[in-house]
Length: 279
Ligand code: NAP
Image 1 (cartoon, rainbow, N blue to C red):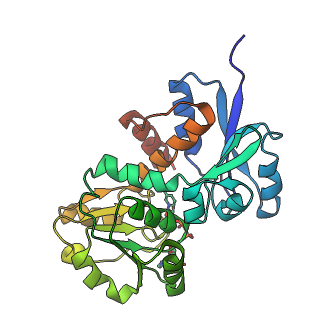
Image 2 (cartoon, helix red, strand yellow; image 1 turned 180 degrees about the vertical axis):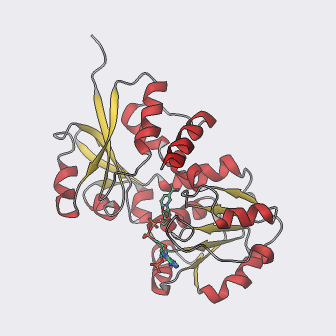
């Protein structure tokens, strides 16, 4: 008898522009898994009921995106990473228990390991622009990798302050006016705002002041080469793009649902780049 057909999904509101089905579909094909990765548009009012009945909906697990990541944490048994970040992006059923993790953390660090190897060798000062959900995952990853200091700059300053309460004394809230001075000292500069994304204003910081050995990372992947990454390239700095994080954050959920660790390959990247270019 053939292997049972099983499904996982991405739950969001809205969710239709996601490229995750392409990533998971590619890996299922590579590993001969009989299954499907679907998109589920679920309203905030219906979310908790939906995930507490995930098996009844036919799913072995799910990814979770905006605006449900905090609710996913509350509805499940989170691991240490999800608890520390305060948000979960992956749910899976473990003998009837609904468990959760946050794979944006490993998506970010694995992307840098891949695209800018050695980035964490002497990580004294990181400059983190943004203080939303994704920035919390980045900050946690930076601390896991031994960053001494992470300076968090955000338009809404109190959000940056709340980072310190959550993640500890190595986090330093800072203002936009501090950026030029912080840039001179930063080993790593990360854009975790939505600035630079299609339809949004650009991230305007002057990388001339950055150190020659600084690494730049942008979480935005539409466009793939943001104005920040173009500036980093022009300045001769090493950089990592948001697509790398998107691909790497998907590996752990796949492993949790299907029991096999998939690889982020140039072939997969090309596939997703083509889909992004097609709109
Ligand atoms: P979020 O929680 O809504 O946070 C958005 C962040 O952007 C906040 O820090 C916000 O500042 C800032 N921001 C928005 N508009 C701004 C503006 N005009 N000027 C200055 N700051 C502005 O969103 P998120 O989930 O953290 O996502 C942030 C970015 O990361 C998005 O571009 C998202 O697509 C990307 N992302 C990428 C991946 C990946 O795998 N590559 C994964 C997750 C997220 P305020 O607090 O002041 O509003």
